[in-house]
Every structure is written in C-alpha cells, then in structure tokens.
Image (tube, rainbow, N blue to C red; front, top):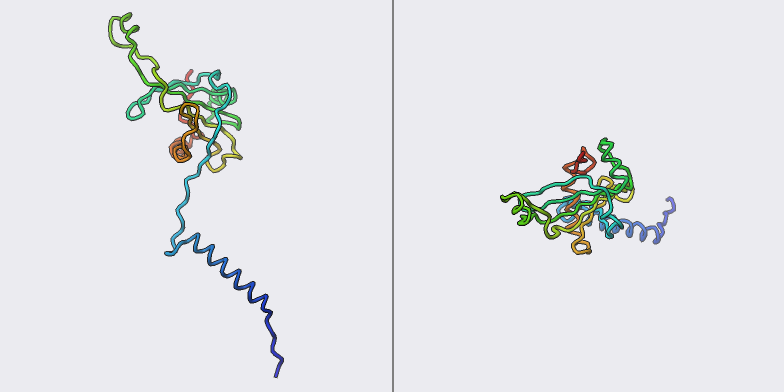
Length: 183
C-alpha cells in the first residue's frame, strides 16, 4: 500500500477563506437572484467656484422657456473662448464654461420710452450659477467634464449635480456643450 499524503490544515483553511471571500463578492455583485447590480450614474462634480468668472468673456446668451423660464449668459475662460471661436467642437483641458441665469422681467421704464410693452430685462438671479470644467483625467467617467451648480455661493446637493452629465450626454457630438459661440 502506498503511504497516504496528508493535506496541511493551513491549506484547507486558506481554501475555505478564499472560497468564502469569492462567494461574498459574488453575492455583493450579483445579489440573491443573480442579476447584476444597476450601473451607477457617473458623477464628476466641482465643489468650488472658479475665481474671477464674472470677468470672463461672454460666449452667448440664451432664453429658456417652460419650467426653467430664465434668461442666461454663457461665459468662458480664455481657453474655452478660444475653443468656441475655433469651432471644432472639442474643448481642451482647462476650459471652463459658466452659466448665469436671471428671471425675465418686463421693464416698465423701457416700455414707457417705447410707448408699448416690449422690453424685458434680467431680474433676480435664478437657478444658481453653473460651471463645466474640462479635465479629461479627473473627470474621465463623464466625458472629461466636471459639473457644478451653486445657489447663493453654496454647492447644490450631490444628487442634483449628478443630473448634469446625463442631460449633457445629449450633446455628445459637441463635446457635451449645448452653447454655440455667438458671433
């Protein structure tokens, strides 16, 4: 008879621990019913307001109707403005775009001067100030852009900021930027 080979208790313990860890990871990933976990919406948020943004160049203006109902100015830092002017649809790292918005209010003084109701001006700030910051490494999961919104100088919730990228994904062919340079 051939001598029996003994298996080390340490080997058995190691195999048991590895098996338990693999089962735990599988359970966390696939859940009880074997379905994959839902993919999380990627977020890439910015927690500070870029310095000096109110001095940046005006890129365009826009009017949003419906539930948003505001008028807005789109500003860009020098890097973003250069990319807008080149018009190739790609923004290099370091580009920052700001969106300022106000309520749309009739101007009684202007209407009186024109003799009819036709003039509107920017009223109170509305929907905060928003920023897109291009950093292809830091924000790789969201097309290279980080997003933020600040109401009264304070960043809105992470959940609210997480809605930016899914909306901007509709502008994929324009590097996630809706605005066109106004010439």
